[in-house]
Each structure stands twice: as structure tokens, then as C-alpha cells.
Image (cartoon, rainbow, N blue to C red; front, top):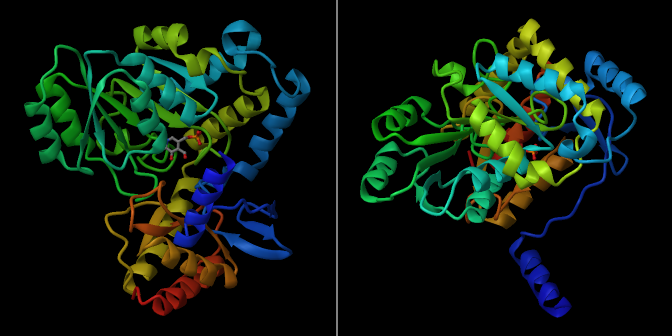
Length: 389
Ligand SMILES: Cc1ncc(COP(=O)(O)O)c(C=O)c1O
């Protein structure tokens, strides 16, 4: 076995697709220290820069004192402290759903939802660029899967019409696609739901806290808050904490509690994470200025990069993909940017499709104008060297 793995690792290296872990030290909400040099972090998902907010830190520290470092048992056995209930109720109310259920993280939530709620005779229609957690969950499900072209409603409807089943049908999609930063046409998907009686499972990991007037996520943008069959979101991105939530009606949540294996057979979250998530949720409900500053930064970065000639595809919001092509080119561009003090990774297959390797920049609230000016200058310089602009 070892020889086979070594050969594969060598192939990854030859292709420019070999991954290593970069060990670093955070210096502030936006800066990291890596190999004795300070970098601007251009790949954080903490869009609202909440992970260093004093109220989150205080809530987490207080919870540590009160509950200890970890519950050391699964939620169903003895790990469901009352903080879970408060957070589940508040997040469900915020997003206009009946009920919430917290999972340890978004990956486990997605694995739990789809593999548990779909069965033998069912059909799952899945966007071709869905996140790996959705793909893995669909693989675990016994339902038949049909992949539709990215955000392509015509293709999806054609496939719905042409695929028969005696069971239930589901559409599975992200709201904001994690590697492309573009959005799912929720209004069209919702029309298909109504027309064909299909259930929608929506992953709003990158929408929560960022999109919508009140930060409720992409459903709010489309005036569809609370209207999906199953809504999933995470606390580990804009909310600056850790964990994930599933929102749905009572029957679905009760079924997940009884059968979702990634809910049942894993240690509950530390109370400090729950407390930080609750603090973050209360901040975004009360204070829209964080989101406003984030969007000013997003606009500033986007306008300058587009003016410089970068093709940012259909992206909107804080995720900015700069597609470079093959793996080696993406690594070259990443190195050019690292040299200029920007910390980010080249995103390559299997995270994205072949020949769409890219730099995935993220914009956060904590960036200063000077941070962004420096980043834009460095990206333009690297883009010219790579002949992207
Ligand atoms: C769209 C999407 N769904 C789910 C997840 C998984 O969430 P978590 O990091 O909480 O496991 C991610 C994070 O990478 C994501 O981008």
C-alpha cells in the first residue's frame, strides 16, 4: 500500500497538486504570522471579523468557566446543555423556521441531513458545483442522483421532467457557492419546488450573516425566508464561531434527532463554541454596521479588481475567485502573492473542477483601506505577470 500511496503523492507533486499544511499564528483578526513574516489573511471565512470580537470572546470564556472545556459525550447521551436549546430557538426564529438543530459542524450537518432524509426510491438533483460535504452526503444516500449544470434552471427542469421516480424528489444546492462566490437562483428553484412538488435542501453556509437586509442569508434576498424544506447554515464562517445548524419543521428535526448518525454518534460541541455562536447571532441581529462595513470593503475590492481587468465571473459578495487554469499556474500565482505579504492558498482539484484552479480571495470587515490598497496592488501585479489581465 505504501508504495502505491507514494506513487500517487509523487503524481500530485508533478501536477502541482500536492498539499501541505501551513502552520501559522494569528496576530489579529486579519493578520497572521507565518515563518516569521506577517501576512494579510486573504482567505478567512470570518467575513464579519467576529472571531476576535470582545463579546464573543467573553461569552466563550464565561462558558468555559461554567461548563468546562468539553461535554465529553454525545448530545443524545448527556451533552445537550440548555445553551443548545436557546441557540436553536434563536437561530430558527431569526431565519423564520419552526425549529433548529445544532450539529458539530457543517460537514457533519450536511452528511446527516441528506443521508437520513432521502431513501431508496428517491431522486436527488444536485448542482454540479456543490460543496464536497453535499456530494459526500449524496453518495451516502441510497437515493438516485442526477447532477444538473451549475445554476442552470433549464437543464434542471429538463432533468426533472425526464427522470421518473415513485419516491420523493429533492433539489440540493448551496445558496452562495463556496469556491465561485456566485448564487443559486432561489426564486427559480422555489418555482420548480411549487410546480413539481420537489423538496429543497439549501446550504446557506456562506450566505448567513452576509446577505439580506438583516443578514438572514440568501433566502432573505429573494424574499423566501423560512420557505425551504431544510435549511442548513454554519456558525464557523461569518458568525466567527464553530458549529452548524439545520432548520426545518418539527417532524424533520425529530427525525434527524432519531436517525441522523452524525448527530447521534459524536461528542457534543464545547459550550464555549455555543456561547460564542449565540453572542455572534445577537450581535448581527442588533448591529447592522458590521455588515455595512463588510460590504463597503467588498465593493472596494471588487471595483478595483474589475477595473484592472480581472474576470471575476458571476461572483458577488466576499468570495472572489480568480481562475488561473491549471494547478501549477495557480500555485505560481499564489507564490507571487505570498511574496507580497498576502496569505492565501491555490485552490485546486478535487476542491474545484480540473483546469479551473484558482485563487479564492475573501474580503472581511476588518480590512483597512491600506490593507486593501496593498492587496489590490499585489494582485494586479501578479495578474499581469501571469497574463491574466
Ligand atoms: C458550502 C459549505 N457547506 C458546508 C461546509 C462545511 O462547514 P464546516 O466547516 O462547519 O464543516 C462548508 C465549509 O467549508 C461550505 O463551504
